[in-house]
Structure formats: structure tokens, C-alpha cells
Image (cartoon, rainbow, N blue to C red):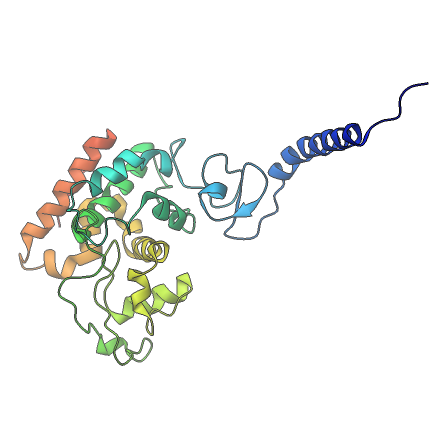
Length: 273
């Protein structure tokens, strides 16, 4: 008669059975995640919005955007992102605040970013976005605008009221300004931009989401008109009319050309405004 199985043998057999079941279920679960709107299906079949879900192996949902078969994450590499930061000073408040990981996490909410046209067109949008970010933040140095002010647009107070003690000065990667932007950005993203604008300078994911919200609302749709059109969309009143602040405009163009060269693409036409 065979020996009776020991507790160790029973446990080993049970573990083997569990592992076999997991191996059989995982591929199907990954293929049919059934995630809700705005959620990514990870390569393991789970739903979420961070890099573990929307990054490498993402099966469905707002996976990090593609650029002719290459994800935005593969274009905005650590070397690309940190190369911008490397030109800022060690004392800069944004050095530890702005990270590639938080940019990519925020990007999951905007799958339309750099998702249209040819590979060159998509990479131009990436180059344009980061050219403006580099200019606005001084190579990811500043989170808050240096010259802080109230920036309450009276004509917009009916819909977007300014609250006592709050200043709607520039914050974040694109230095979003004015109550007329903080209000709708907050409503879209899910924070109270009028009562608590400081969150844009405190939460790096929210900060990048506001920049991407502004970009997708005002600049994304004019990329086909050339980089100069994005300057008009971001700071046209100060840099594109009457010859004011042409040095600022030229610096944005220089950054754009630098990133286009780095990404191996032609910059296109209509670079200035």
C-alpha cells in the first residue's frame, strides 16, 4: 500500500493547483478587463491610472498615447525629461516636484495628447509642449510665478468668482493664470480651483493635469498651424501683438527647435507669431 500523503505534500499540491489556475485565468482577464471610463487595463488584467496600468503592456483604455507605434513614454524618456531638469539650479523648488512619473500619470487622463497625424506631427506636439514648459518654468525650476499677484479677471467673476485671500497667479508647468482658467480647469480635473488654487503647486499630478488641460483646451487644436500658433494660444497678448516681448517668443522657438532636433524631426513652418 502506498504511503499516505503528508501535510507538506498536500500543501505543495494545493499551491501548484492555485498557480495553474492563475496562469489559466490571467491572459483572459488581461484581455477582457472591463475597466470603467478613464481607466487602463494593465498587462495583468487590473484597472487603474498609474504607470503600472497605463504604461508598458497596457491592454486597453487611455494607455499612454502613441506616436506612430511608439508611446509618448518612449519619446519622453528619462534622459529627455531629466535633460531639461539638469539645466536648472540645485536650489530650484521644482527639482523634486516635477518628475517624469507624475507627468506620465497625468497624461493618462489626456489620451488625445500627441495622438493625431504622422509620427513627425505627433513628436512636434511633444516638442512644442515641452518647449513651452521649459520656458515657463525655467527648466523645471519654478512651480510658482515669481511676481505673484491677485490675477482676478473681473469680467469672468460672474461664472468664476475670485475668493478672498486667493491669488490666481501662475502655477505649474505652464504657469496657469487667472480665475477664468483655474475655475474650469478645476471643474474638469476634479478640484476647487477657485477656493484652493494652491493645490496646483502642491500636488505634482494635479499640476501636470492642469498644464495638459490647458494645452488640450487651447493649443492642441492649433498645432497644425505651426509652433507660432501655440505661442499665440499660450501668451499671445504679451508676445505676439505690437512687438512686445519678442525675446520671450524667440526663446520659446529656440527650445522648440532644440527638442525637434533631439527627437530627429523637422520643426515645420510658421515658427513665430
